[in-house]
Image 1 (cartoon, rainbow, N blue to C red):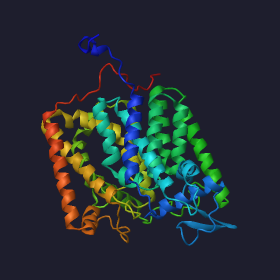
Image 2 (image 1 turned 45 degrees about the horizontal axis):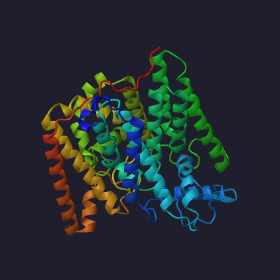
Image 3 (image 1 turned 180 degrees about the horizontal axis):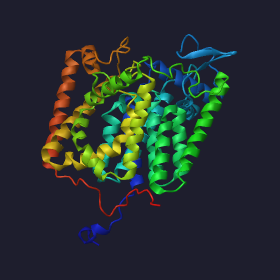
Image 4 (image 1 turned 180 degrees about the vertical axis):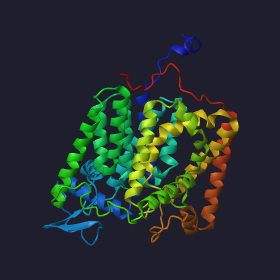
Length: 449
């Protein structure tokens, strides 16, 4: 049979899971290539990595001998332990079991664990967005989550909590929209082990699904989440000798006593502060926000639930800890879980408003390229300044990084960015994309009552 005789319309389409797997593999290759394989520049990542090594190699949480060399170690009874939360430690332990038997503990297994979690988050985002837009557009959405946000420079750079947390909440959402309530709860329980206040995500999904389906089966989300919470309590009791959600973490409340004002300032800072603002470091978001109303009007229930859960988590985060906390990283981090949960709605915003005109699409392509370039700048050069704690309104890290590397290298980066922007805008201007998903393709649907 000649190729011309083949009925292309009857060729079977690749399953979404296969393309999602490819997205995850490619994302992992890039993220792993730019991860930090030297001594972590942040105390949080370093202490988590040491604890994962100890658990994998010696089967316990005792870190006696590392005191004075590793931060966040505390003397409890006859031993030293870390106050880092267990979910990320559990995630990285298999990587150390397979790759990290050296002494002193090597860094690269923790970097690979961080890159793997972030790549999973990109793959999960792709599979969700395929239910809303074409696969090409879903690929762009997943790529932007992976490379145009702090996912690249924080989650995949070192062993922070954010990469595993992003993967966990997106897996929870996938299970919810497939009516796999218990699996959704177990995924939510793993998120609780990583960042306990992510329990609000399980709460929102559970209540919304019960109201929508008028059934009690979604209570299984709570059952699975409570299992994760029980493990967290048992872990903290074993280490700290008492039942506690936060264990040895001594900042479960905001530094400021004016919580409402701190919340308002935090929301503003998370969006527009020079150092931590999502709209500053990911300007592509500016070209989708005008589509919020139209997207919300047509959004499936699960997209709305995910957005509400994301913002509920953000409020809890800002109520507990100031938005500018921490240093030793590039771009924003504490908003990454919220941003991940909002990816489906952001994709709909693009579909319902940004994609409607050539000018909007082209401008979005330019801003998306700039967003990737800003994060590539920090991920590839792998440098963050020290001593910048709690100055989010006075520091813009790309400028500090440019000063660090000098005029010659900065000029090369700017020239490369300019070429990429021109190329992206030219291709987008010429291309007329299909903005909606294939109407014959299956969609995630939450079962009616």
